[in-house]
Length: 177
Image (cartoon, rainbow, N blue to C red):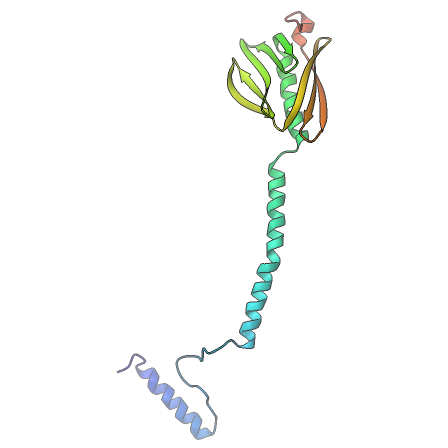
């Protein structure tokens, strides 16, 4: 017996019934004719191709938006740096200001901010490597009355400046040279 079993006999029986009633049958078998695409298959393939092709620019725009949002703007990075240095200098003692670095003592640790390649890094007791600002083209610290003034230039020419005051110097705990 074939692998079709009783199904083969049923197909022959249906074919015989259709022939006696006058219906024409082109192909009555277990398989479809696979010689070519029909118009419906071609339209479905073309519409699938169009959907994929049209979604690629949307995906690329989404990826660029995600990439842009993951990198913080300089404004946020500068504000974070400014706020952290300001809070540390508020409690600092023995502030030492050079044009390209600032160091001070806070809670027994010597903290130093200095230029490192195109960044500003923070070091504690001459150890560590914490990048606090990136894409820095140049900066300079200057002594002002009871504090420090910083001029900074990012790559691309964007300039910012900030003042940091040491309250311990005002209270007599430390002096800024």
